[in-house]
Length: 177
Length: 120
Image (cartoon, rainbow over all chains, first blue to last red; front, side):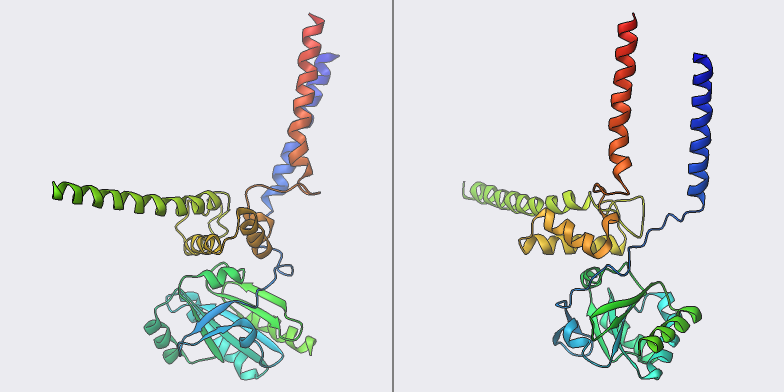
């Protein structure tokens, strides 16, 4: 009898661990934070790319109803791919697109904009990457849609924009209006 | 003699400079060892050389310079990146099993041993 119980316990344990591991297979290991709960520090200070003045996020997002914060760098290849999408979004005229130039050289950043066009209404620089971390960002490229009136994050994209994300962004803006 | 004194002073200055520098970054090391590097998972911020981790270390240094204590820095990062960024999970309904299970196993094991001893 005792032997039976031991055997049953072992079999039970193996089965349980099998199902736990099986379930774990379908789970992605990449963690991304709860996007809605991450809050933004609007006192964030940064310098403009085209002038030496300092500004805060409060001043940056006072234009229009929505702001789109885009973190980019000239050395970042996916940023090059997503640039047409930003130009497209800018042509809607409903968004105040703010660029944060992440760990970049001034010369290269300006060259990038000159070459590919400027979708941004304002560009600030983040040479040490600290400002991006204060925004809760991972790296480049990253895009955050903010409702300027309620000062809340509506959507956050880690990685480059694509057709699907563009459509989704347009949808959100339409619905919020 | 004068040269000797000069050399000694220089060594002393270098030494004290290193010491004060090390004291600061040691604190950064200590905090960054408890942080998970979110883009290179499996590594701590301390171990990683990714852009994310490097910026994080600068940020921690800035916060220390501002006079923030460890707890405030952890809380700040948790508010930005969520609980996942710290290696030390808090007790909540998702992690209660994680914390309680070892205790249960410990007590259970203790009972088993006691029973075996008393049977003998």
